[in-house]
Image (cartoon, rainbow, N blue to C red; front, side):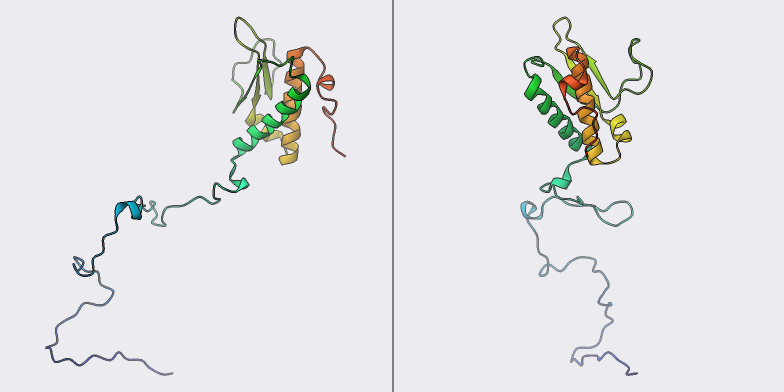
Length: 180
């Protein structure tokens, strides 16, 4: 096996102890210093507590997969509402649709015991009718994205049927049917 040795340069100057190449200098040499303007450098990034560096986004905001679960859920609710409003728009004029994370812990006395997936608030004393869909209970019952979209649609149809005093099958003929 060959051995490698460092060659020392011969110079006319007297030898002086030199620091290893990897040793840090106390102050940078003024002729080597280069200052980057702040507008070019951008904000200074700091390391996290374990020294691994700042984590960036895993998915850039420009791709569709960037949507969070709540954004995706809001899209399912919006699609279901648009489909119902296409047929029942006149009866639903002025109705507000909302998404909340979890149902309140104090249900109304006339509501059945259990976790609600949605709630219908009829119009009263100057307040418009309001239908609220609860995200977390629906997400916990769904087995996949397609099942989640179907479940959101069914909850919206049930609440619209309750608001209008009709059966859910009248609101949406595909209510509760499994896709073949």
